[in-house]
Amino acid sequence: MSGQQTEISVAELKRRLDRGEVEFLFDMRNTDEFDSWRIEGRRPIETINIPQIDFVGEEEKYLDRLPRDKEMVIVCAHGGASKYTAELLQEKGFRAVGLEGGMDAWSEFYQVTKIQEAPEIHQVYRVAKGCITHIVIADGEAIVVDPVRHLDRILAVLRQAGARVVAVVDTHLQADHISGGRDLAAQTGAPYWISPEDAKDAAYPYEPLVDGTLFRVGSCRLTAMHSPGHTPGSTSLLLNNRFLLSGDAIMRSSPGRPDLGGRADEWSLLLYDTLFHRFSSLADDVVVLPSHAASMQEMNDDGSVRLTMGEARDHELFHTDDKEQFIAKVAASLPENPERYQDIRKVNLGLLDPDEDKRKELEIGKNLCGMSSR
Figure: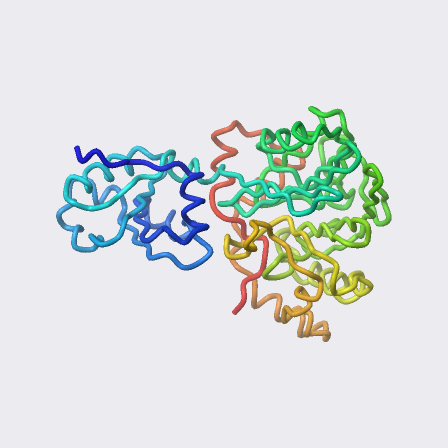
C-alpha cells in the first residue's frame, strides 16, 4: 500500500469544494444515476463517469482517461467501491481518494450558517438536495420554517441558543423532500402550521396558515403573506418588514415552478398574481430567504443563500407583465416533473408512511423546485 489517505469525509469534501481545491471527480455510479444527480461545486469541476460495473476488473482499459497530474475524488453510491478504487489507483501511481459513505452520505450532509445576529437567523442547508430550513430566534423563543426531516441539526441549533420553539411552519406542501415539520412539532410541543389549501387532504391535525397570520417570536413579528403559484397554499413570512422567508415562491435563480400539482396553467396565473401584485409592496432592499437552492453556485461567500427583492426582480419573469406571455415563458422553463414527487407529496400529507430505506430512495437527487433558464 502507498500509505496515502484513501478516503475523505463529506465535510472535508465540502471544505475542499468551497476552497476550489477539488481538481477532478471520478463518479462510479450507473450512468442514469450520474446524469440525474452529481456532485457540483461553486465552480465547474472536471468530472468523468465510468460505471463501477465497467471499471472494476477492467481498470487498464480506462487508465488513460484518468489524470496523473491531479488528485481525484472518487464517488460511488455507498463508499465501498470508491475506497477500493482509490487504493488500487494509488498503487498505480495516481493521487486518489474515495468519498466516505458515497452519495448516501453526501445526500445527508448539512451546513449551518448564522446569517443574522439580532434577531438570530440560521440557515440549515442540506447541500446535495438544496433544502434550506430557517430558524429565527429572539428572546429565548424560536420559529422553525420548512424543517428538514433530519431533526438533529435543527435541535442542535436550538439547544445551543437555549431557545424554546413556539411555532413550526411549512410554507407549502413540499414535493422534493420529506418534511420534518410534524415530527419537530411533536418533539418540541409547538403547534404545526401549514396552509389549509395545501393540506386539505391531510391525515393529521394542523393550525391553518392563512394570509395575515401573525407570529410573535420574542420581540419579533412575522406576518404571513399568501403567495400562491408554486402551490395554491404557498405562504411567505415577512420578518420585521426586513426579511421575506419566501418558501419556494422566490428562489435565488427563479420563482418556484407552478406545475408540481399537475395544473401548470392554473397555478401559473396564481404565480403571476403573487409576483406582480402580492409582492409589489415589498421594497427592493427586503432580503429574500428561500427554502431551496438549485445548486451550490447559489451560495454566497459567507455560506448563506439569499438575495434581495431587487435582485429577484431582475429575473426575466418579472419583466413579462402580459399574462399570456408569462404563462408561455413559464411553460418553456419547466424541467422534468419526477414521478416520485407525487409520492413525497402523499408522505407529507400523512397518506403514505414509507420505511427509512424508501424515504431515502424518494429523496435521491437534487431538488427540481425551480424553473430552468432556456
